[in-house]
Length: 128
Image (cartoon, rainbow, N blue to C red; front, side, top):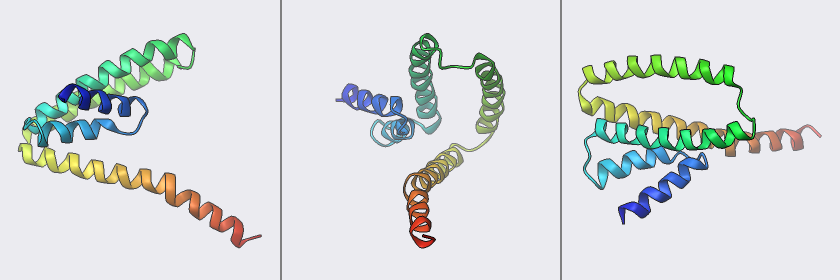
């Protein structure tokens, strides 16, 4: 059963739905993983998915290598800084921070995909 759930979450990650948050929730609530271990496992799954899709995008020439190198450099710096910060905190605060991040990103996605288009449509009909 776990294989099927991880497969479905991976498919969601590949479509950009945000399956990573779901994976962490699954690991912590269903499999009783500690929070930091769940986040690390999620990161490993995300890296594997990202590297496998990288080859396809490179083949189709849809990647600007200069931008990728900048993102890799800044991502590595951010990872080192954030992991040292998380290691100095109580794990329950990492759980709260992840929950807050998921709520904020969900609200931003809701606004951009639902509310913003409705407001745009409303303004068009209002000013005609």
